[in-house]
Image 1 (tube, rainbow, N blue to C red):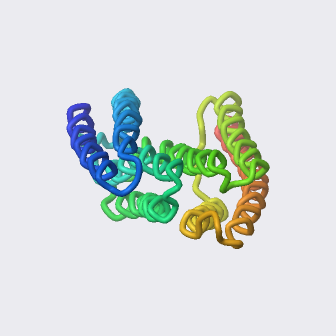
Image 2 (tube, rainbow, N blue to C red):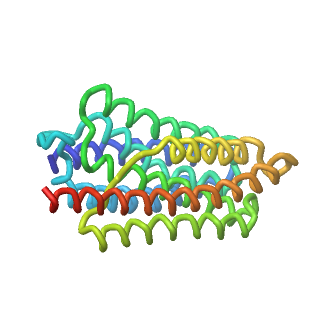
Length: 251
């Protein structure tokens, strides 16, 4: 399994090298290619280290071991590896190009889940990693947008608050229950879809569109709603786990 992960990441590193060459020959500062490569290669190495450390979680929900890196996990890793490219494009203020990269990465969020379900390869690692990767993906995008002044600071602070609620709730559930229950909800998926749409719209429209400010304010409202939904979901999961544990002891 670890060899499979390493081989795939080496291929992605070669793709990153090709992307750096394309950035270097495009109109604009040629240093963008080097900056991207200096960010991308350590990021890929870190991703590989984390993936190999958690390779033991690549088993299906039925308990079957996965002998090699499955297609859905490859798509998920592709989304992670593309983060440095998105950040470099945003910081270079190439917003339309960043918007198309963002849309492609957002598409992989749907594609990896579809492939996992269609091919019967829903893994424990995928169930745990997918929400964490979504948080990383959207959080880093919001940070880059805030740094270039496209996203208001108050919205970015709400984004941080939302991820604090997510991380704190996950840590609290694990501490109280001894494990972390994971459940995808329709409301959660809907919020992510809206968030992806608003971020993509801000990138494609760029700095000079009056709708960018409106999209940013709407994104702030989404953070408040998602935070409230996360609190409600955490309480529901805790009560459900307690009821299940009580029923098992009673039996």
